Each structure stands twice: as structure tokens, then as C-alpha cells.
Image 1 (cartoon, one colour):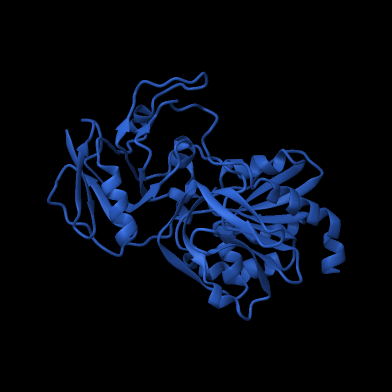
Image 2: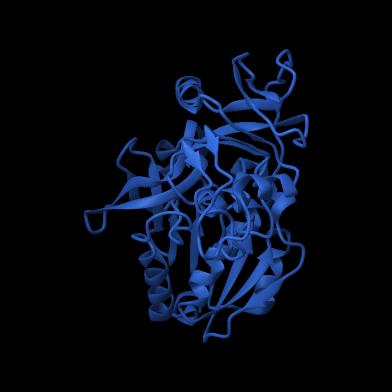
Length: 355
């Protein structure tokens, strides 16, 4: 049946919906530029509440499997593609892209001119949108919700049995962040962000602030606790965690026009002069002008738009990255960030810093 993607500026894009698809879904429309990795995108909690437009024209070639999800269910509100194939081929696959979304009652609008949609978003920015069967629907502007509460785990759990104990503060963490640490000999305690005070009882060797959805300023009430935490333990912040570190230390964040979402974003490390490719998914960035009196150095910069991609504290073992070093999906060129963080953590020792 006919379906439509309608943006808050009134733009209407026609496509097709399966008969069993829900008649309406609403969320912020964004686009993802990677050719592969759609299962990780669908299940990444950072996409909570968003309608994702895939720019690659054919999605679903290798199906959906039981191992590549970044969470237990898809987190996107809706999906827009040019073509969603139901014929897949991969030795791990157990269902098609469309059937997976249908099982979770998530609409997939296909046969859409995705190039035109992306050009609109690039020109006028991400905005509220709906997928609907009614072409006359009017989209409300300015809707904003705290999506972190919807994706965070409710109880603490521990995985791995390594000698290095890491407290992963969950703002909507990706599974591959935790497994990346476990593979490096860590025992990881996953702590819901609203219970971060329990970290002091755990007395870990270090703390990692996870990724997560939405505006970092929606978590402003927690910034004093975050500042105390990162001032007490060697810390790594990833994506939303990076932004929260900047805010907690006195910096500011701002929203990009259409964000960075893809697996081919070039980033420079100012410490080495090296440029490497990264996987990214975010709308907000740290404002460089706000860091004038904040005790940090800009460690990483985006080559495309010069936005801040990571910070390092001048005195404390605090490192933050805007990109995703776990790289699911994406290139693994940035995975060394975990190695550097753990090496620094082991080299300095918490007692030497905070005694």
C-alpha cells in the first residue's frame, strides 16, 4: 500500500508500506551513509526515537542474525530505504530485514527516493517527521524527549572475569563496547546511569561513560555526579559520554545541522598527526569556544568539518572520543583507543593519582 514520509517543513516523499505495517510513527528523521552494518544501526540505542534513512540503495542483502545486535531489540522508530530485499544470503542469517522489523512492529517505508530525502536533510537539517498512510498529515515541530531513560538497563550486571575492573556507566550502551573491554582482559560492571553513585562501592580500576541517544543536556541534573565520578577514577567517554564529560567540566554542546552517521568519517589525532577512519552516530558536538577555561586539550578533530572528536584532560587520566572505537558497524582503525585507555589506567594506578 502507499505510504509517505512527511517532514515538519511540509515535504512529502512517497513510498510503499506492507499491509501489516503500523499506520503511523513519528520521530526525528536522520540518515546513515554506510553500505553495511544495518543490523547494528537498527539495534543501537543511540538511534532511539529516530526514523533512519539508509542512503545505500539496497538494504538486506545478508539478512539479520542472532549475534550482531547491539541491544536486544531494534531501537529505531522507523526505517526508510530505496529497496529492502527479502532474499538474503549469509551463513549466520535467520530472517530478512523486513521480517525482522515487522516482528517488532516497526514500519519500513521502501521504494522511496532516498537521495531526495537526504538532500533535503542536508540542506535544512534533521527534523521531526512521520511515516504514515495519510499524505495530508501535519507534523508537529519541536518535539523533544529524554530518550536515555527508555534504553538504559534497570539493574547492574557484570560480564567477563579479567583482572582489570571497569565500571561501564550505561546511558544506552552498545553491546560491543562491553565486549571490546572484555576481550582486553577486563571485568565489566554495567551500571545504570541513575545508580552511578554505587560505583564508589564497586571501587573499579576505571570508568567508561557509554554512548546514548539524544541531547546531552537532558542529563544536566546528573552533571555534578558525573564530574565527581570522572575526578575520582581514570575515565574514558564515548560519544554521549564524551559530551557529558565536556559539560561536567564546564564546556558546552551544540547541535549539528544533520549530524554524523556513517562508517567513513576521517578523524585526526593531534598527538600523532595520524588520520584514521571512524564509525559515528551523533547529532551533538562539543563547542570549541566553550573550552577556553576548561582544563582539557583537543585530542581529535573531524577532518570534514573541524568539529571536536575527542578531548584529553590536562591533569587527570580522562580521555573522551566522539566517534565509536568499538566500530560496530564500521572500520576498526580506532579500536586502539581502548588499548591506550587501559594502558594509561594500568600505568598510573588510581592510588598514585587520587591518594
